[in-house]
Amino acid sequence: MRSAWEAAARVVDPEIRALTIEELGILREVSEDGGRVTVTITPTYSGCPAMDAIRADIERALHAAGYPQVRVTTRYGAPWSTDWITPAGRAKLAAAGMAPPGPAGARGPVPVALTVRCPRCGSAETEQLSRFGSTACKALWRCRSCVEPFEHVKAL
Image (cartoon, rainbow, N blue to C red):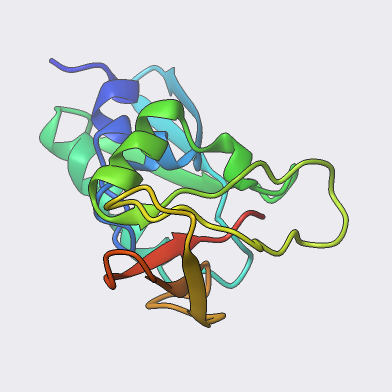
């Protein structure tokens, strides 16, 4: 039987399908008490529409791994930060054609990316087309060198 952490960690984020919830940094804790497993997650932001799907996917993964009693809880403090994305997650974002975020740093004003390197060719000759991409946490950019559009995960 796979460990409860391993089973939960393999759940793929429904909005950024290139990453697992562990790589994205929203998987916070997995504990076992008797036959019951409790998984704690932190949403990328409080209104994230993917949270219901993530909860259901965690429950399904743990049931499939042999854990009949699963509870998924949400922890809002400390708020999630893109700094929690693992190095493997950042590499997977780039491999999937999405520019990973830069450091978010201390809480305060959300940093605005002035230059984003193209995840396809590496050029810094890029331009933002839209502050919002396919989800609120991404922006749409285009590379002036290879002329390919790409999404950039915003630093939060």
